[in-house]
Every structure is written in structure tokens, then in C-alpha cells.
Length: 179
Ligand code: IMP
Ligand code: MG
Image (cartoon, rainbow, N blue to C red):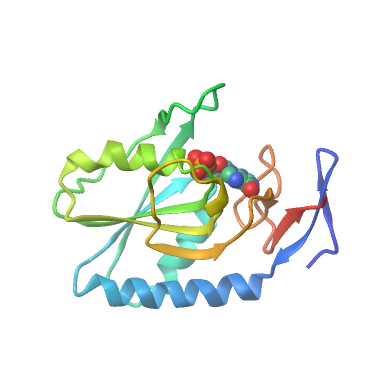
């Protein structure tokens, strides 16, 4: 683990190690297996941020499972509209499926709330939400993730898929913005 990393003039310090991430993902995989009860869950990875978390969770599952990818962008206007733009949509039929949406982080909840609203009419048997990181103090929408890797304070972080302007995603550990 690096003692610190700097992107665009901002310095970040170590926060969650790769060992902690790996151990937590294995625990989450056991929870998903237990909850699946013979169903074949469809993991829907929200790109780009969740790519690493989703694939690590997926390959730790010791049951039949499928994975699909979507790409979203939440509008960041002057007011929080809850509008989510789909850059790459879901082609899989989710009717009667056990769906688990995989996010890197839930901050205001705008992205995941918008996605749930989009998918709800499509007749899935259930739609759950898994997020590696959750900032409960930032939440502005009515969403409650079913699987949470780590609850964290409302601080900006990078690493393990999370970025600052595209950078930092390939760090294997998670770093927090230095005050
Ligand atoms: P939300 O829609 O406000 O919940 O924000 C979700 C998206 O904002 C995430 O999928 C991330 O792409 C981004 N985001 C929120 N917090 C952070 C952070 O601390 N670091 C990097 N990206 C973040
Ligand atoms: Mg994201």
C-alpha cells in the first residue's frame, strides 16, 4: 500500500486495505449464496465504478450466477432531480429473475434510486442492492442497500474502482482525501 497518492493536486491517504476488501467480499458472497435459495441470481454491475467489486463478488460465488453490465450517469444539476441517464442499458430479460444491482458506492442514492425506478416495472421476482461502500450521512433518497461492504463517513475516496476524474480506479486499496 502506498503511503499516499495524489491526483489533480489532491492527496489521499490509506483507508481500507486490499485484505479488508477481499475478506469482506467473501463474507458478502456467503450472504448472497444463503439468500439465493436455489435461484440463479443475475448480478447487474453499474459501470464504471463497480467493475472491480462486481467481478470479485461474482467469482467468489459458489453457486450458479450470471452477470450483466450497465452504464449510467446521474445528472448533477443545481437541484437534485433524481434523474439518471442510461449510457448503456440492460439487454437481459429480468422478468421473474432474482436481480442484484452492484454499485461501488451509495452517496446521495440518486443513481441507485433512479435505476430501481427504471427496473421496477420489468417484473423481476426481486431486486436487491449491493454496494461496496455506503455513506449513510449523505443519503437523500429512499433507498436501503441489502448488502453493504463498509459504511463510511461522507468523505471522498478513491481506489478499487472509485475514481477522481477517471484516475485511481486501478489502486488495489482504498484511499481517503486528506484533510
Ligand atoms: P449517488 O448517486 O449520489 O449515490 O452517487 C453515486 C456515484 O457517485 C457513485 O457511483 C460514484 O461514481 C460517485 N461517487 C460518490 N461518492 C464518491 C467518492 O467518494 N469517490 C468517488 N466517486 C464517488
Ligand atoms: Mg459509479
